[in-house]
Image 1 (spheres, rainbow, N blue to C red):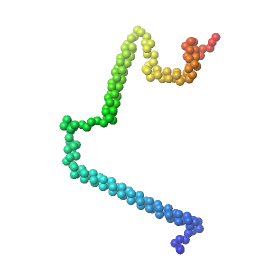
Image 2: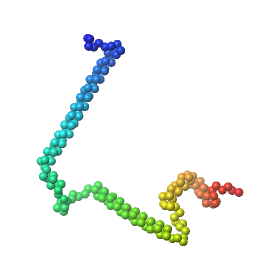
Image 3: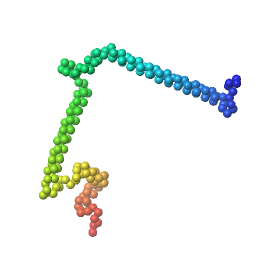
Image 4: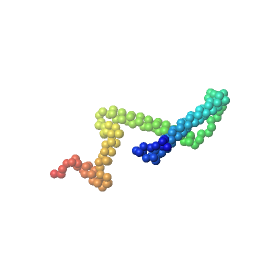
Length: 168
């Protein structure tokens, strides 16, 4: 009984609990090492099978790799998803072309407008479309939300020279 002698600071049931936890910890550590070992063994076996499969069919596999797709080997029919993807890519390509054409036309128009020296250019008050959009967005954010108030504010602004001018 001398081996089970416990100091007075730690109760007996706590000692047994600590010993039990240590034993469980050691078992878990051993189990995880075993699991890692068997996992590695399984990976090695799979790699070995793959190497054997390649060695046995090396000639056929390399022949397939060397073969160039020609009319001799007909392509399998495309699935619905492949056709959809192909149509989608085609439409994206067309949209890109249309956008390019539109940009060319827009730039040519802008260049033509810049070349008119004698006339004042009323069509291009903003530097670009984005600056016009930002100005309109700020205006919309600053106006009241209700339609009637919005109309009153715009009417009063357009009727007077300045919205901040006091009536005399």
